[in-house]
Every structure is written in C-alpha cells, then in structure tokens.
Image 1 (tube, rainbow, N blue to C red):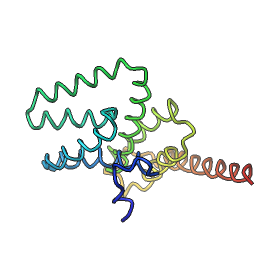
Image 2 (image 1 turned 90 degrees about the horizontal axis):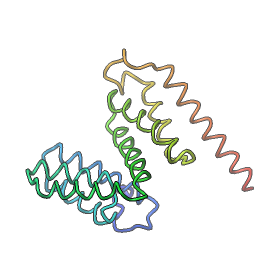
Image 3 (image 1 turned 180 degrees about the vertical axis):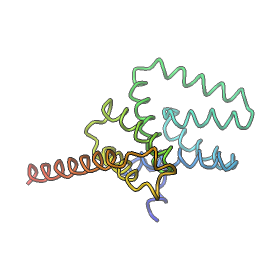
Image 4 (image 1 turned 90 degrees about the vertical axis):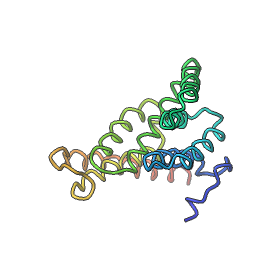
Length: 187
C-alpha cells in the first residue's frame, strides 16, 4: 500500500500531516505492545520532523520515558511542554493535538473510543477548523460508524443510533452540497 510507505522526511507530500498522525498512533500502539524501541524510533522521527512542535509526540515521549523509568528525560520533555505553553501558537497547537487524538480514537473503534472521538471532534472543529472538509468528513464518518452498533459498539444501551445517524447524514449532505457549490462556482 503506497499510502503506508510515505516517507516522513518528504514534507511536500500531500499526506504529510496524516503520516505524522499515523506515526504518533503507531507509537502508542508499540508502547502498548511493550515494544519500546520501535515506539521510541517512531516518536523520535516525528519529533525531529516537527522540530519538537507536535504536542502529541511530546506527550508520547514523556509517556515512553516514564515507561522506561527514565524520569530525568521525561521531566525534560515536560519542561519543553511547559515552555510551549508560553508561546502565542500554543492554543492552535492544542486544538490540533485534540483533533489528532480524535483521529486516533476513531481508528481504535469500539464504543468508548468512538464516543471519545466524537466528543473531541465536536469540541475542536468549531474552535479551529470549521471549514476543513476532510476533518468534517472524518467526524461524520465517526457518527456513521456508531449507527452500526452490532459491529462497532460494545454496549448497545449506550448508543443512541438515531441521533448519530441524523448527525452523520446531515454532515455528509452538507459536505456534498458544499462540494457541488464549489464545482459550480469554479465552472
């Protein structure tokens, strides 16, 4: 699959952000599988490429160093995070990190993670990317996944399928209408 082989060093790639997000997710998966060398390798790639500006990668690094019981390095990463709080871009970085977490929870599936993903998308999208159609589509697809509770949800009692189906349908129709209007304007 070509999408999975995208080089992280290729910042001109149209999939650059997705690659960063995917590597952050894989870092967490490797950590959960107790494969710390692979997790650290992926995390270091993301940190190097982002110039230590990706909050999720920094959080992952602190987590990994705590797992390795390297408190000194973990504290150093936490100090970097605290320094970033003082920058003017921190709020945008925080919302972007929340969107990345929503993306990651969406990949895990299961009722708990999908509900968390929906809550994170609902919080972050209006604050930063209200017009980003790719992220709006991801959000709509999370709602759509929740409508099929037998496959995606552990506890059907906690899922209100009609509400999720309505939100998913509204989002997908709105995105389709926006795309149609854009095509008409550009023609």
